[in-house]
Image (cartoon, rainbow, N blue to C red; front, side):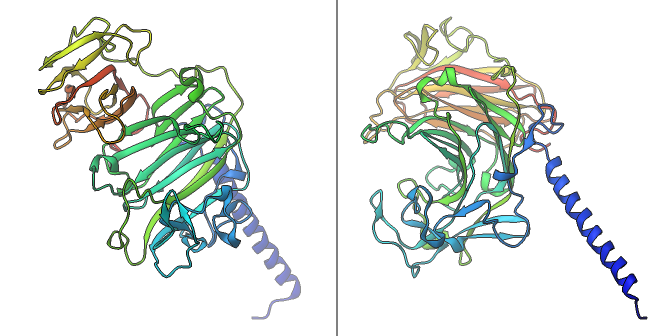
Length: 456
């Protein structure tokens, strides 16, 4: 059947209109996306398209992203963490996802020179960085880290400071607990280059989750305010710190660029050929979204109440059970306003513990500040452990290790079973029997209307 010219024009107009409506629908769908932590957008978030991406199409958006190593350009002169090197062919878009592939490629034309004492050789990997910057907002990524002995990272850099929302090791043979670790950190680049603390970690937060992070997709989120930082996993708030609390450790004062990459940390774990499959290992990213909103007068860090009594040991060890040589010591621990911390003496097993009533099918966070005073951070490493067990989840007895000689805080996230009504929490030197100190043990309920950390 032959169509007239007018019929063809009408048909073309309908096709164009349909395409326009489809495009408008897609754009509106993106704009309608709300943070997983605020699904009803009660705080009035607006997506910043300049530093967000759904990774549709068949290639990276070069108007939005710098691909590290393309045209021999390396942002911040960062060519990769040797022995790995950033290579443009490691970055691709496939099936609506960003794919960063780390490969064993000994025949690649690696650059000369060294990075932190290591040659660039054998391993290629990838990184992308936004061309534009932003200041304050809610940053969120849905992703599946590379399941290999390397780090998949989502991080931010600006004048004087760096925020690593996470550096996730898919595999860590020396300590399998690290594979469950959601590690966030600040790095201070504002100091003089001759200062030994230049670029070093000024603050960090380690939260051990109930699962290997590289086994599945999860949503990692962070709200950066002018004077606070909130950390989320799958929409649940797990930590909040303020600028006032951190003092000169706070580094987030200026605009930031967004980074997504895979890196190798050879002094922690150095991948071998057999660790990287023939096709390579992939960091898969569904989306990167950055929202912003008007400043508010909200209380920056209003965390749930600590369930524990005498958590700061200001009443000695009242309410706690002890085994071995355990005592409250007069001295300032993590809680500078307090008067005591607990000392577990060396020589024999020492443990402080208590049984706590909890609710079934509820997510909790157990945290403590601790130090191993005889560790010299070089040749002598002594350890203490925070743990929880008997909370109605068969086979789950999470523990997290402390080894530094200064006070620092770590956390364990866990979800109680359907019929659980109590749990057992403890801090111990059991496996090494060396002196360790602990203070300010917290147990808080994660109060969010949607999912538990187990996805139920």
